[in-house]
Image (cartoon, rainbow, N blue to C red; front, side):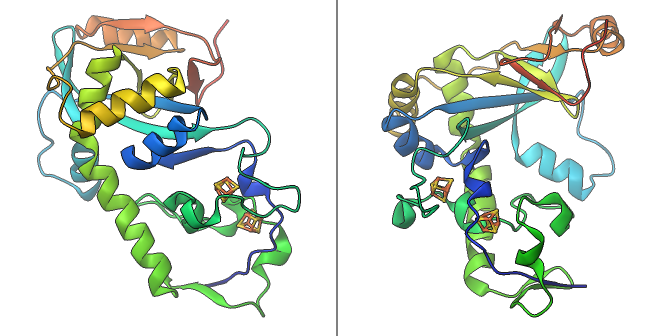
Length: 253
Ligand code: SF4
Ligand code: SF4
């Protein structure tokens, strides 16, 4: 399958989005006073899956170990720039006012940042005319036609994994200890941007105490999931959709 694409500069991808940032990108973004959220999810992990699959190897690489009650878990953290409406760097003519220093994720779109994840143009915000067959080839049989873009994606994925130990330390320093049950949602933490930037910088500088294997509360908005988690010995809590929880399922009555 061949995907053709050219950006129409409609600006949709610069509105109402959560942009996945590396630690260094988040230090810069939050240091300017812009909102960076911490999204957390917990994967119950009593033992490494046997046999290991590409997905389980990736889940292990993108997470760090913790406990929830009596149960070993792995915690996956994402730092995301968050803005309602336009990005603070978006100019009235829909051009980026931060073009030279824009995060890698902005350079990747509409390509997929995550490994092992299929995507189609229908998943993206770009308008239909951005995908016309007479436009340049973006991907052919899953291969990216632009070596520079492929290199940025490779760097984005590699740095995301390299950042995991520092994200564990930052959670410890910030007191973040709640995570959503994986594949059901994401817990959202919104520290003050300047506090976050300072904390991440001190982690980068090696000044923060190393992360302990801390105890996590797993949150869900599904009563059946809550009961299963509690029966298995996890610390678990029922939450509702809202600023602190982005659930894949609606709240139950
Ligand atoms: S940094 Fe630039 S490219 Fe990225 S979302 Fe903001 S305006 Fe868009
Ligand atoms: S949504 Fe797509 S077409 Fe519109 S500015 Fe972003 S990349 Fe370009």
